[in-house]
Length: 154
Image 1 (cartoon, rainbow, N blue to C red):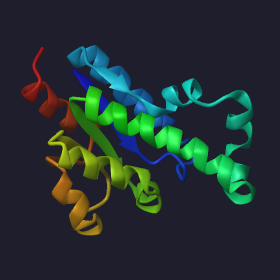
Image 2: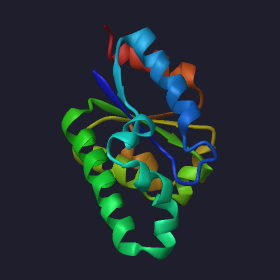
Image 3: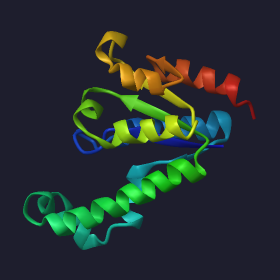
Image 4: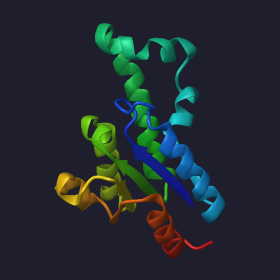
């Protein structure tokens, strides 16, 4: 089984690394599942120069920026739709500001890939669309893992 870890990167203070590292480790230890962690995958598609200048190109070189973004989007969605069994989405104030997380869980829903939402936000502050794309919402990692253990026993 492979989990796709969806959540904010662009606006998150740590690019979403912290929660992804924690959840990745727990999924491997407790369920024996693999993960697609975009934080770890990004260096496989960006050159050193692209990684260094990527954010500034957003403002001053639309062509380079768009070329890079298209590679990232294509790679992420290909992995999501072809290699992932389910999605864990961390939905927070940073995800709300971005666009990738919205798109990923919508595509997952459309392809009938289960989405498990992990959020500290109250339900009434989460978009109805996002809730509609999700199997369930969990307010802590342990509750999420318990559900995954039930659904995806080794």
